[in-house]
Length: 477
Image (cartoon, rainbow, N blue to C red; front, side):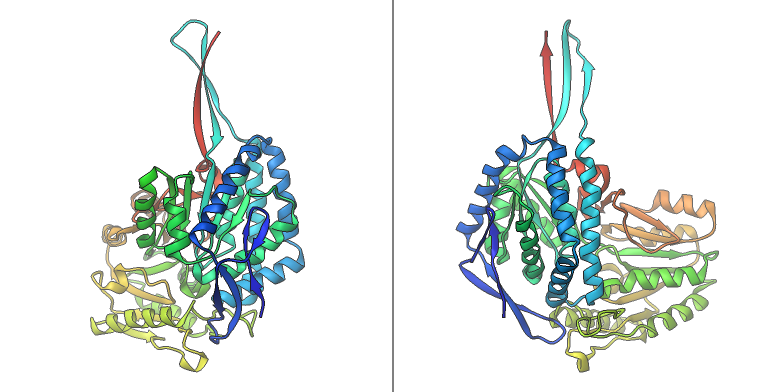
């Protein structure tokens, strides 16, 4: 069994302790990773701070060229296989989907390097004679990147590449549930010739590594993707030293199916938007509102689509459409939410049970009818392959129901009416609206949440500028 070490200051460092990596499909221990101490974590921040002094002075184009070497290395067959396998082993994603995550993580990184020649400022006239006011952008310093377990490499790349292009140095803290893939990536980083301390990957327990990174005064920014509960805790800790935060948090995405929707398109998109990654995506469709005139036809077709999905072990079946959840505990939590909904009056159309014969971490596509807005299954994030259906009669009612949530990450609307599109995209309270398509943000877009779904965001121009700060210089001549 291979043991993976943390990556600090250009070296692989065996942490003070070890953590087992368990494949959720079988419960088998497949590797061990370092569990770092407070002192080792602080040392990583110190090394990043020292490396920042030189890294920030390199031309942004030069920094991007260094990153491109790493990305080319990452996209080789050897690294896609190695890192992809690590993703599947730690969180159960079908192997081919995991390999795709590595490839598209590198593709996203290549897009982000294009910002190297687009870091802009401006000059404005002063009120004083012979003076110009110059505002320009500089890097922040040490950026801590805290990565979730559901897309452990894609999200890592989404954050570290723009941070590095902007001139920052980084300390990455992967989820305890998905540290293996980050350390597999570290091997690729090490081969790519970065200066020591520019990229550091520190694995370990949240109450040690996470606590240190979010409350250490030498950290200049924390960017996090994960649950709203954890995000609030990070924000509170960072406030002690006024550490900047960018938080992409939970979601409860509504899908609205109007009476004039293309039902077949809506069914296919909503199925994909609910069951992708076994339902473990923050912007997945979590609830669907269907106009009463099309509810029967829509529900029948969606039920058939759900029933046709085969759940398989994603390591043994690389092309599986759906695999296990991250662990048995999460599968049990999802199941308890379904049982609660049934007690409250929901009807199970399909699924609704643990697939014990596959090992306990597997849960089938589950469709619930006769749901009401007050149910927890409609209000709380499920983060699993369960979809409640709610009926509505008017556009106004659909908007009110969709907005009746503490979350505001994404939404989907299905209609052929220009008026409906304009009303819905204008009035829905969320950071992203998808019209007649499944969720899936573009590199050049901006992935951000409203309300309890976060502060700040990733991707595109706005996401890149999260990693910069403005300096204004008054030039008297």
